[in-house]
Amino acid sequence: MAGILWNGLMLAVSKGFVDIVTLLHKCPFIDINHQDNDGNTALMIAAQAGFITILNYILNYYSGVETELRDPRGFTALIKAGLQGREDCVTALLMHGADMHVVDLVQGRGLKDWVLRTGRFETLSRIRRLQAHPVAGQFCESYKPEWPELKQLVEKTTAPKSTNQKLRQRLKESLSFSFPHDPQDNGVMDHMVRITTSIHSPLVVTGSRPLCPTSPPEIGKRRYAVPELLEKHSSKELEESTVSHSNGSITSASPTALSATSVSLTSCCQEAERRESMPSGGIRSFIPRSMAHRNSIFPSGCIPKIEVTKSGEPTPKKEQKKKRQKGYLEPPVWKYKEAKEEKKREKKRQELEKEDEKKPKGSKKSSSKR
Image (cartoon, rainbow, N blue to C red; front, top):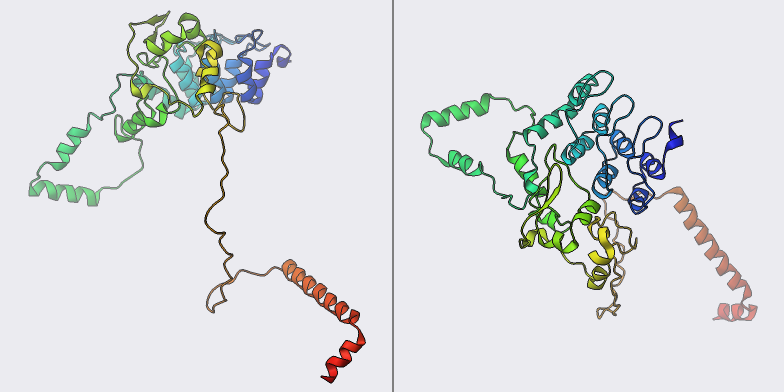
């Protein structure tokens, strides 16, 4: 009976229909915080099901999403994601500002207690790593992609060593065993993840543009959706000024020039971009291209001009089959192919016999006399 009070968005989320979820954000009659008979919201359904794409879309493009709504037992979307071991959903909710210290109303247990009780140790490890690094600094405009520990490691490796030190190192390398272990904190793997996901990375800058480059995501800091930012600030202010998130409001600092790495590349058709600019398109210009509902054949929104020209080079001739050589494997000849070839030969033989019968008898005699 839980589905009686579901709205269209909740039904689409439960089925994992991403395309319908991206369309319904334009519907003014959809209540994003609507709860069914069991107290579940669309956010809770996406979190406990592990639909990370839908969850991120709801958090970023639906206005007024309440992450702290509870069901009758007192479970929030964050606790439900932790109970099911949805690590990515837990991370997205924490970085969106969900309360980590909230407890349920029945047993008074928090997120970590329920994660340990259900044996979701990988989720617990993810939470601890997030607590060790609560700010995603690589999403800030002031982030520097240099690795600070690289200089010390290079100096340590290139420093001259005595004979005793070399002997110890060789003994250590020969007698030690290498076991698989987790990456070291602030090590080379962490640094590679940061530089490849930062706003200065060429992989990111070509497909996205940060709206708040001075306010990176942080655990416990409320993040506002794109429509909420558009209500508070104009499109020109979002593109030319620095907008930051805080726990209770959205602040705007003095205008600063956008860096070359924080501006997305222009598309191949400038007219289409003008038609979908901020005054006319609004939120649509901030929706990822993979989710934008445009032409399915040409997702960029413009149809390229195609010119067909005749090639000046002659058509290449078909290569002749190479003769079989002894000592090499040959592809097998299947029975149906042999039967097909046999039918062709039989048909050709019958056609030749018919042609011989149609010829006059005199021509046969003359040919025999000769």
